[in-house]
Structure formats: C-alpha cells, structure tokens
Amino acid sequence: MLQKTHSVAGLLAAEGVLLHFQVPLLSWETAAALLLGCLAGPLADIDKPGSTMAKVFFPLSFILRLMDVRHRTLTHSVLFLGGIAALLLPLPELLFWSFLLAYASHAFIDLFNEQGVELLWPIKLKFRLLPKFMAIETGSFMETGFRYILTLLCIALPVRYYWDTVSGLF
Image (cartoon, rainbow, N blue to C red; front, side):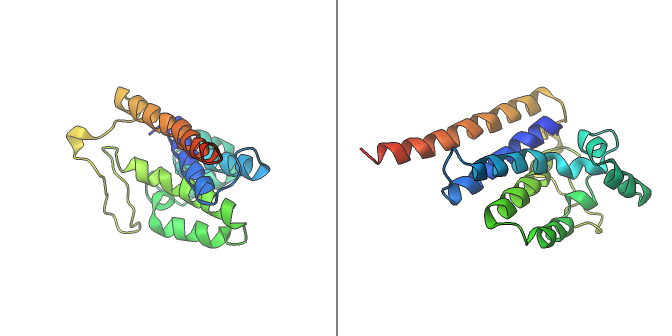
C-alpha cells in the first residue's frame, strides 16, 4: 500500500483511540494524537528504500539496509510492535495507544496486499487476508477505493460520535 493509504489508516486508528478516551475534538491532545497517527501509520515502511519514511528517517533506514532487513519483515512484525510498545511505555496513555495502534494498522492493511507480511518474523511465513486473485495491488484502483473508504470512515466516525454527544444534550 502507498504511504497516503497508511497515513489515512493511522489517522483512523488514532481517531478510534480519541473516541475511546472521549477526548474533546478541539484540544491539543487531539491534535497530537492525530499527528502521531498520520506519522506512525506509514512508519513501518522505513525498511523500504526510496519510501518517504526511509528518506525522512535516513539514519535508521540506512541501519536497516546494512542489516539486510527486507521489506515487510522486521518492521512489520509482531516482535517489532512489542519492542515499540516497550519503548513507548513512558508516554501518556492517549499518545501511547494512538501511536501503537496507528503503527499496527500498517501491517494490518498490508495483509490485504498480494505480497503479504511476515508477521512472525524471523519465521519466514507470510500472511495475507485475501486470496491472491482478490488482493489489493499497491497503487491500483482498488487501493484508491480502499483509501476512500478509510477516508470516509475518518470523517464519519468523529461526526457520528460528536453528533450523538451534542444531540444527547437536548
């Protein structure tokens, strides 16, 4: 999937966390969580040379390249997610969960891709949710449609929640 699809998925994950914690829409906490979601969503692609995340975090990307880490392996694994969770423990709960779930959304939506993901890395076993003939190709029309659905959810989720909150006052 493309970076913009991962960013939208990360944003949606962060919105879910915000709604769970019932954070006011117009607050610094909301802004921080949404920003983290947009950045954490595509971050797992730091292992893909040429990706935006690899360019932004060049030193880390370079180290991964020196270690010969292939795309959709280490940085997309449950093991790496656990390591990130351990590093993020000092963060406030809202930011911890926003970052962690946005990061996890990356591997999850890559499971819809034909190539699959080595979730149990270092075990070389690829997982995917759809059979190859139904899988979403990176950059395809299907991915664009998938991204639009995620975007609509990003709009509908907070609108619905805050509408229910406001209508409950009357």
